[in-house]
Amino acid sequence: MQIYLDHGATTPTRHEVIDFMADVMRSQWGNPSSLHWWGERSTMVVERSRLQVASLLNADPEGVIFTSGGTESDNMVMMGIARQYSTPQHMIVSSVEHSAIRLPASFLAEHGWEITYLPVDRLGLVNPQDLQKALRPNTVLVSIIAAQNEVGTIQPIEKIGMICRNANVLFHTDAVQAIGKLAIDVQFLPIDLLSISAHKFYGTQGIGALYINPLIAKKMIPLMLGGGQERGYRSGTQAVAAIAGLGLAAELAEQELDSETKRLTHLRDRLYTLLADIPDLIPTGATGAARLANHLSFYHKYIDGRRLVREMNLAGIAISSGSACSSGAIEPSPILLQMGYSETEAKNSIRLTLGKANTEADIEWTSLVMHQILKVSH
Ligand SMILES: Cc1ncc(COP(=O)(O)O)c(C=O)c1O
Image (tube, rainbow, N blue to C red; front, side):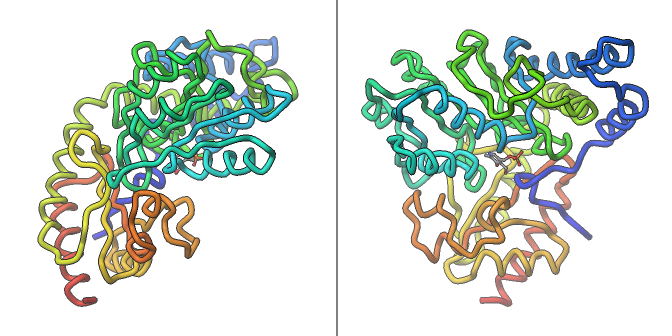
């Protein structure tokens, strides 16, 4: 029996998406910038996807820019806004951002920018009052992750966004982990910029989008200069088939959001209950509604997270330690350190992220295997 519980790292591409992408590659392969019939047919695919992504976010389709994924969208915001200014200014990010925000922030700091890292509590939550206090006259951007990839904590995005809007400061959120698990409505929520990535919600790797509130247009210098595609924000011939897949994945995610969130929350809570009696396995991150529906995270008091990942893998179950994007690294998870955990606790952290194909039987089996492994290892 093989069980995949690492949907936070990537999700399997849905078969509907694969089939649709194959059709597009066979029959709508023109360059969307071309003026002839072939080009028009590809433009139709790209624009339909834009509508599908916009609908998922309740956004103006004008604001949806296709990128190569979460990392590019995050970099585009941080570097694109910074390049708008001739002298360094001030930005605010949380201390639990993904490296796609964290590293651009440290790059900018090395180049004279002032960066405030908002602290988080033991659950990984930012305090909006700290944001209020951190704002300065020269703050040009606030970027706070919507849902943390390692510990599943969901930030109070509405409160954070309101503070930014009242202060007339741009607000970006990395919603890569949130999409498909949280309803995000950019007309209702005060969000100016938002990053998404298709491979976290059953599209393919290497495609994503950045939502840019059309009202703030022209406050960002593009990273890619060239043919002027994507309203000049992201030059380069669009990846038509991947974009088609992203659009379909977005439409299906929107349709299934309520039922899937409910189902995953039930499975998450069931697994949490089943694992609760394992000695020395301590949950991390927020609980209940402030936690992603598909996300469980722990640290073990004595066992290295990577060792547990390997032992679970031998038993046919995929989980991850720390962030999968950096799980080759031996350093303790910087996220757990920021949340106040010790180096050992941060090194011993694991994450289990559920997805569409997981069943009750998977949950029961995972619990049995983990009980067994941790009984033997201890
Ligand atoms: C919160 C978050 N942001 C950004 C990324 C990077 O996205 P991509 O893999 O599409 O570059 C990830 C990937 O794990 C993520 O979890």
